[in-house]
Image (cartoon, rainbow, N blue to C red):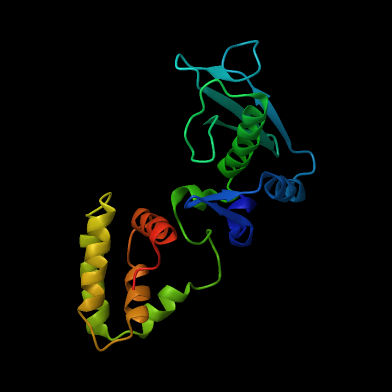
Length: 210
């Protein structure tokens, strides 16, 4: 297993418009810790060429590879604006920014921060138990059973976030005498990663579900 898969990057994630980003400079520093000879390269999409690939609509794609311990992995990324929308006729600054973001993503292909793109909360082999899982263990068996049955129904509502939120609120309202945060955390530990990611984005934009 890659050493980079085991690194918890949580303290180095930057949030922007509900999405998570990892600093390319910090990520590259972590790479150099395990392989001082590591390298990264700007690539082209056609043999003998280096640089972005421009699409018929004027938008562009960049291509970067990262080599760690003689293992090379590449990644492509559109040149995007702050809303993660493809830019038409991007300038040099936008292209350079895309290359550095693509570098961070190519490093993730080796394992560092890969769980960000998968929507997971913790890296592989992280020894820390999430608070949600701890709370779930402390709930009464009948409540845990109820949450276990409710979670798949909530997951099934994806990608309709409005229905997801409606079903979460229904679960919270089902046990009015219990601590709502405990119920919510217990439910959270049973939801799928895509659902958790969508709910996080919803809460970042609209406030915490209570």
